[in-house]
Length: 193
Image (cartoon, rainbow, N blue to C red; front, side, top):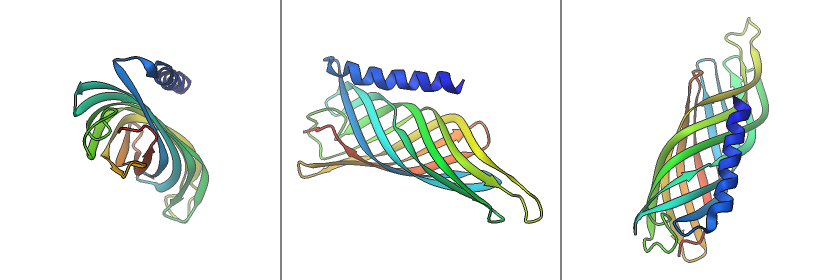
């Protein structure tokens, strides 16, 4: 299932890149950093990540659009249990989301100075973990792949003509009892002016 999902996401990102010149839609993308927390009843972890966010936007009106995006991320994960046991490895996030974009950044040549976005979809997230329940037992550690509902939202703005930014929050609500949430800061490569 994981390989099929990753193939689907790769296909969506590739399609977003190839079809960016069609007139009914606009290709937007940005790159930046994320920091996510992984929490369950047995462990807590965190990971700094590099993020690339391609998306295809479809016009609703002059100040709004909807889009399909895939804010993929790759980083370094570390976790600790209540007894101090820790582990570290690579972490990744691969969601696909349907978003509503308002104001600045919703379309190229938008006339607004400030905008926002929110959306939901499905995602896969992988990270390392370590969970010792108490000091007298040997716990387990390893790499966990979770999947579930993905949601995010945030704001977009510009400073002068050169700096186009977006910041936001995101979460994965997994079916395995693990919650992932985090913060993302993206430099918008697309010039919306």
